[in-house]
Image (cartoon, rainbow, N blue to C red; front, side, top):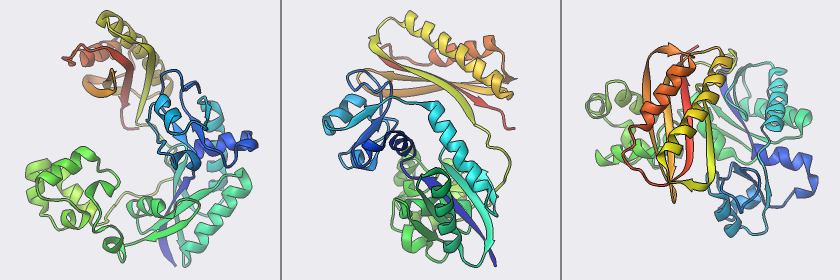
Length: 341
């Protein structure tokens, strides 16, 4: 018996929930986003595999999705339906003999002692299917990092094992942003240091990277590239790291007094969300998407953790004040980063 970590990821979760409600859509390209009208501004929240075959991806403007896949069925976002489906999935996982850590709507980590992790993975998929009619992929690893990355190789509705033994065989030649937690900006900085692949990052000197990327980040990146992750699987309830609101405008906002008013309105909604979370905010971030589609963010750290509306509103305006450009605005967002529970 060995301790294994398994990562469960629901396949095309939101689209799958919609197909369950509308069986006639099975096998057709389905796109979910905004209010479901591709003639209006909005972005794709998710797309079925059939729509993805046409290049429709999350974050793509709905009008572009309609051009790429004119025959797609467009549906509005229904948060309540997805939250209810997620709750059923997580309840099903908790019926299994494993430690379950919820990791969002459609993801969870399970820790289990077994001599047959593939067999347990098949049991997970069958149990989730029986309870919810939803399919999932399962990644198997010796830690959460390996399991999370393994899932991508198992999709759709498959199983994949990624361990220290095959880590570099599978990932060694891939770019550094193939690693969970490394985005395009960090990958670009690593590339500037002559580090382009996972193997090259794993072979890097942590002390040298610390000088370039910081005393914590540098060594952490090397450990990541080596497939190491000490974080445990815990059954503690899932805690959101932030609460945010955003809105897309059907007509660009040219008047920055109006932009400031909209940020104030969003900050009020976010403050209500923070209060309901019973965890104070520590930083407020404002996102601005300029016309046609350039997105920038700025943040403002709070002097002390708080859920006070006035403080959050002032921080949002301070973050907005960091934007030097005064171009027309198509989208605004305000996000409060929450204190650790």
